[in-house]
Length: 604
Image (cartoon, rainbow, N blue to C red; front, side, top):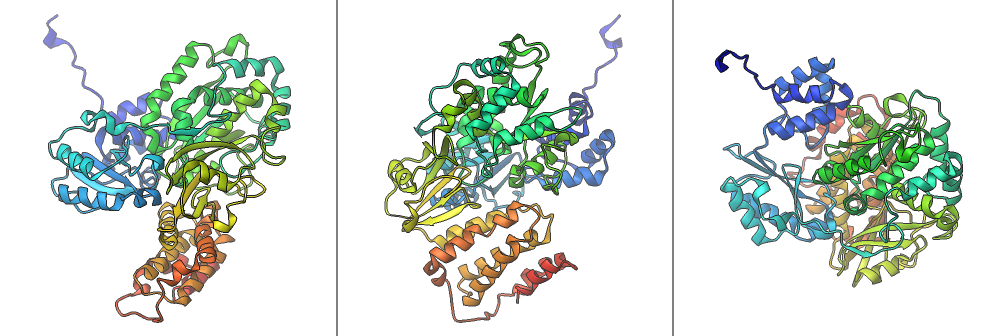
């Protein structure tokens, strides 16, 4: 038979290949869209409709998911999509001027697609690189650290020459761990399989009892008792149980999980496997934040090696019936997905909207089945407890806050990076170790945490005193704490999922009032309105994002009032500043919601 008479093989369109690879599973929608965009550059409506039909979903659902995540684009954004990290520490290091410099060189307006359709430049929230910023993302999966004006000039030249990011200087993409002080979790690690062997020797119930005895609490911020969570999941009826790792550390100023994922992945995956042994799970999922997309291939390589070593898969370490494996799910840029129920919604291929509770995830989680969700640092701690015992862990730290905590230190200090201390360590000790000078404030736990002034530097990191998810941002006396709070307000308004009126409208109102103050149009009445917004939002929002959105505002007004007074004027009305026009959309959003009506009244 002649070659010309053979049936030709026409390559499938990329979206069809993706659907085949994911088994036409609608729960994989976020992953399908992520990979489609990586191939196409954006998400055309026609292809969204084809995907919806193939998955048995409505076009509205697929478009709703595509429109929810900030890393998805339903309009072209160019073959070079450059996103500068807009965290306050990046701003302090000069990111705003660098962004403007790149825009001038490329002849493009911030947030706009250049006329030739090749490039766009904008900002994104914290990229988890606060210790080596300013930083940026290129096409959502390449990170460039330690930006300088010279480096920006070089980037602009490479883009104009159409040099792909993969061919840019390798040193630009260097991300260092920067471990400054190591203790248990950042020190010497158990050999792969050592923790699993210890768990198998004790049995699931005895190990669970040891986790309880350790008094280990979740390291993601909420501090829920890990042993209690696992017990509830283990006892909950279901066709399957799941173990989920929350690696979506989107809190500005936090980057500890980035280092654990980079250099301690074995310890993390071991902890997940031990958790599966306790709760009876066969499947684990890691929800990796979109900004850490560059870690995907190295993490998958670790997983594959563990499978080959008999530490994942069927009959782990030869134990019949102990079958467990892990897959990685990439987020697409949504801070709210750090909330465990929103994370589960995203895993199921939906918008990351937090669920109404009850039921809680340990009873009704992923795919409606019992699910335990713990963060990266918590699972790493589990491995160490399995090897060394619960009593050993309980002897570290304080009675209510056992073990160690890793802090992501950034801002005005000589030695930014990771510092690990036992719970109970003074704020002042951390400032001394990182080389902070003339410090006026520390933001502990990120924007949703607490802002501490000099008089509080003798307070201690502990759940019973100053709890934290890990961020430790230092501000010296040259910084305007009003601008710090304003940056945090912009972050919360940008990251609100929009589900409830108090958060959707309230965060926008806070930004508008603070922008008014920044322009010199404000009065003491505006500060009072900010107080009222805080009270309304704190008790009326659907999830913790809205409730915590005014934390930095409240703290900075109370502790750094002169920073606000410098922006005040005696004028109550300024021609040209039409608050009603700027907030018309907020009015429309209130409808018959009583809380929304109260928020609308605060416009006047």
